[in-house]
Figure 1 (cartoon, rainbow, N blue to C red):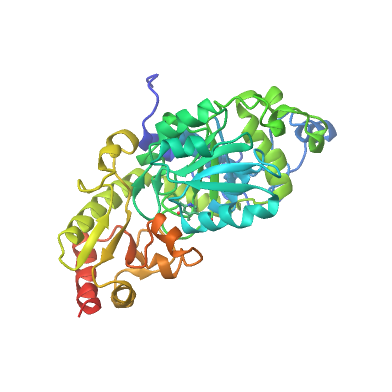
Figure 2: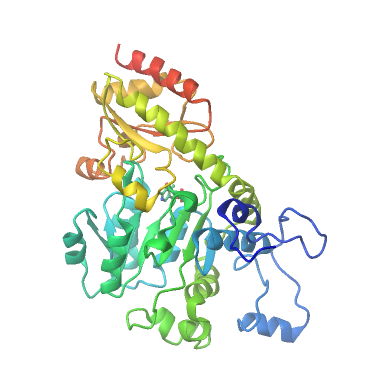
Length: 428
Ligand SMILES: *Cc1c(COP(=O)(O)O)cnc(C)c1O
């Protein structure tokens, strides 16, 4: 064995997975057990004091879920990771220890539609708020930050418009203001983009998408870089004695693992947004082929996007993998291996034609999902982005005359043929 750090293809298969100590099972077993037996009373006390690591109860920790957490932390280059029940749970769990009534985040306005709703409506019930800004305007990002701001939030490759965020620039602003940059890396996956290398503090994922990869699991994950100074006065959950944990100070006690331990010991314990072991097992299987799938997803997306761009029925295509995209130049720095396989295109014939197109496809599935082996299509303005105003829809890249595609792993010729016949019907 050499001392060289294993490559991505090796880590996506092996990180976090050891032969099962009890049976030698090579694949990570599904530990379908709620509770784990203590050796004796002292062992139980040590586990509850966080003095010894082990398994107590699956709302907090489970061996199958732990294997997935270790794999995600490794692939993203983080210090630790916590899995949870969905991508949206991961976002709430990431904000939970940072926020409190009266505090806010500064967020990109180019987001998954559900995230716009979560940030603009639902978090208000906790007394938190979000200020939405166009992250192309760095001065506006800086100006939006005030004494009560506790994070900057963005997506690396923004759903649905194929917009690539200048992570390094946002990280520099976050740094100057003593707040973490949180990056939703769902569309890119750690194969295409590693936000921690660009200065992100926390990376959040919907495991539901490319990581599991076949539309079987709802899950989420938060990866902590382990590099943020939580004792700068703004984050008492980490720096001050925790009354819900007999006065423990998380940053002082756990150092670079403070966020990870807090998210398990307080976040999962009290919010209960836990990932189940069966879901974790499916996601581990999916990740074993992540690099192979993402390469093919990207190659297929380039072919389909090029074909659409040259079709006279199409007004424009927003895919950063096309040289015509204003964000194409950012790929080399942010996601050099590809721009993922999610993009939108606009029909010259407008809203009605978009709806007709959706009803005319055969190979494509009309679903509210992305990152599946199957090619998926949706009209965002009438579905996922329906709760938004038209101004918000346009800002999010989901204007009424725009259709979103998630390009799958089928033969690209078949994908194109299906779009061709559906376009013919939609524009007849
Ligand atoms: C799907 C998605 C989410 C939400 O994830 P769920 O697992 O559906 O809760 C968040 N961000 C992005 C970019 C997504 O695509």
